Structure formats: C-alpha cells, structure tokens
Amino acid sequence: MTATEPLQLLHLDEHLVAVNKPHSLAVHRSRLVGDDEDYLIDRLRLQVEGRLHAVHRLDRATSGVLLVARSQDIAAELGRQLMARTVDKSYLAVVRGWPAEQGEIDYPLSGASLRGEAKPALTRWRRLATVEVPIESGRYAQQRYALLDVQPETGRYRQIRRHFHHVSHHLLGDTSHGRGDHNRLIRQHYGVHRLLLHAWRLRVVHPATRESLRLEAPLDESWQRLLRAFQWSGALPGDDALRHPDAAAASE
Image (tube, rainbow, N blue to C red; front, side):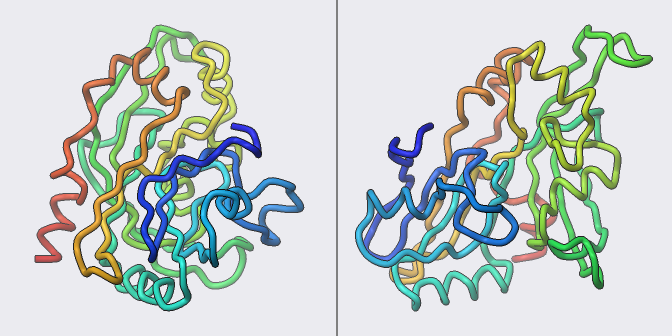
C-alpha cells in the first residue's frame, strides 16, 4: 500500500470511523516510531473530513481493526470502555510450537521504555489449528506452528508479542521479540515479510447509539497465502467465538 492508496474503512458514521490498519504503518507521530513521512491518521484525513482522534493503539507491525473518534466526547467515551475492559478484542497470531488448546499468560509487563515498574498483564488464547512442515531448521527436521485466537485482557506495550516470547511460543515475523530462524523460514519458503499478528475482530458499544458494533478486518495477501499453504483457510471461528469462553462467562 502506498501513501496515496486509500485505507479500507470498516465503519463510518458521524461519530466514529473504524479502519483496517495495514501492517508496517504507524498510527501517528510519536517518540516510539521515529520520524516517518507516512502515518495512518494523515492518510485518513484525506478520506474523512473533520477532527480525528485515535482512541487505542496498534503497533506499527500489527494490522487490523483500529477505532478513530470524530470528536473528543466520543473519544472519551470509547476510552472509558477500554479502561473498563468492556471492549472485546480478538487477534489472530501464528506462533512457533503447539501451545495447549487454550490457556492464559498472567505475567506483568513494563511500559514502552522496558524499564520501570511492571504492571499486571493478562492474555488469553484458543488454539485454532496446527501444522507440521517438513522443512529442516537447526536440529529439527520438521517445524511446528499454530494459529491462535488471542484476547488481551489488558493493553500493555506489545503485550501479545512479549507474552508469547515469555512462554517460548514466539510470534512468526516478530523481529523484536521473535526468533530469527523462523522469521527467515517464512520469508524464504512462503514469501511472508511481516509480523503475523492481526487485530481481527472487535466488539464495542457505539458511544452515540448504544448499540453493539461488531467489526471484522479482512486479512491481507500475506496472511491469506500462509493460511492456504498451511491448509488453515477453514480454521477461522465464527462470530460467536469473538470472546474467549472463560472471559465471556466472567462477564455475565
């Protein structure tokens, strides 16, 4: 996607916009992303008139659903929902190895500086599919990978990437917290040059109408190519699986 190519809008009304953020595109200028010339908010201003307020974060390397408010009041209400953890977020991730069919990682994380006091952080997952590919790497003749449906219950800096690094199920394509040998494997054999983490589905109460708004961001060609290669195209869950069963039970 070039800087002049329009963003894919998943929802647009007078109160908010939902965008399918491409990978490798920073949301806005900050000390964490350096001095780029291309930002999601700048592109979006070419498509949507008026003020725009990004209400939550996605890492530059992560793709998927991103909410943008069109007023400060709407941004504040969405912020309250995020703080109260009532926004359901579901990510797709590909990791090395085969984690358990479901589980959680409860491990405190520090902030973006990676220093200072660590704060509570909780990530849940469900395993959707596995594969064993006959490609030799290191001391193993075959490599095992898994497709996960991941729900971060908190929103710490790079939480999903750091949590799965902590349990040695590194995300594929993660150049900061992953494994270089597996990243090279998916580049060389499958042509995948990105982090395999995608903010796939999001459910939020619309701040103005109070109706439940369900959003889903289509996967890009790199994701689609890997799903086909690993025969995972039929592994994605239906809309009723947006929230992890344990989390859903706790919220009722």
